[in-house]
Image (cartoon, rainbow, N blue to C red; front, side, top):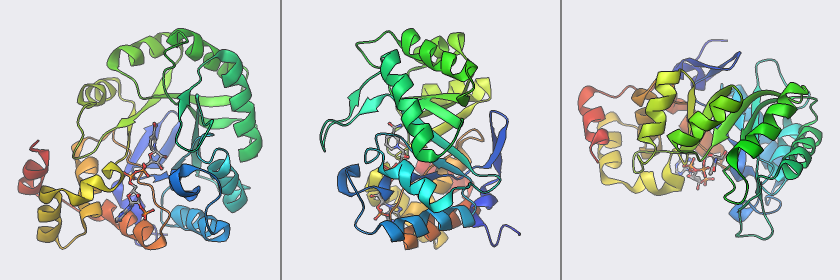
Length: 285
Ligand SMILES: NC(=O)c1ccc[n+]([C@@H]2O[C@H](COP(=O)([O-])OP(=O)(O)OC[C@H]3O[C@@H](n4cnc5c(N)ncnc54)[C@H](OP(=O)(O)O)[C@@H]3O)[C@@H](O)[C@H]2O)c1
């Protein structure tokens, strides 16, 4: 199959530990219900969306035990298990959802051990391709949380480890404990707070996975994004994703959607080329 059949492949590839994936992944958070809480309105439609995402060339899926909770991981397994060759599923642990609007850090080793076992069961795997520590827990020393995950990796339950919502200092701390293959932080045309973390990933040659690549929709309303998109005959979502792809070869965006038409539109962004003028305009703060 050429990239015409799998448009996301036009983004090129990137190394994620010993995996090679297309540089435009899929964020599977929005297959859960509204507010990422409970079941989606139509489970069948979400399974179809997940299968279509892989067909379009998104061969890195990002999920977490807290999406639903559980719902996103269960739907991924229902839609795609036994997983096709080449699909890399990254999940995360370290946040809990006591209620609809709460996302509480939970980085205690006992919790992480239980969380990983839950993800293995829901994803129907014996080993997670990429397990990301979702966010540092201010009540638990970071080294203690990472140490527990490193132990689980040595036990064979995790292939690669990633971190999320970290500073450069926390990334360095994590790397002293275990090999880290990716960092997942918020980053988009409207939010560059993690520029220093992105630069660290470039130096280290590890993947930087921007969450909220569309600013959860906000980047699509930005005047400069709309101007560049109009110039290119593209949509604002495509311009925002093309900017991320052009920004750095270590960037692996994971746009999220529960809509089939948005999914197709986002995959097509992989082929969009920005001119120097477009890039300069989007780079301006
Ligand atoms: N590590 C972390 O702490 C963290 C935090 C948040 C998210 N994440 C990860 O990052 C992924 C992406 O984040 P996200 O889904 O929250 O934000 P996003 O990708 O920036 O934006 C998604 C939002 O934009 C809309 N959208 C998507 N494509 C569109 C298009 N072509 N045109 C118009 N609207 C469009 C979606 O609505 P529709 O459903 O209607 O398309 C949704 O409301 C998540 O799936 C998750 O895997 C990680």
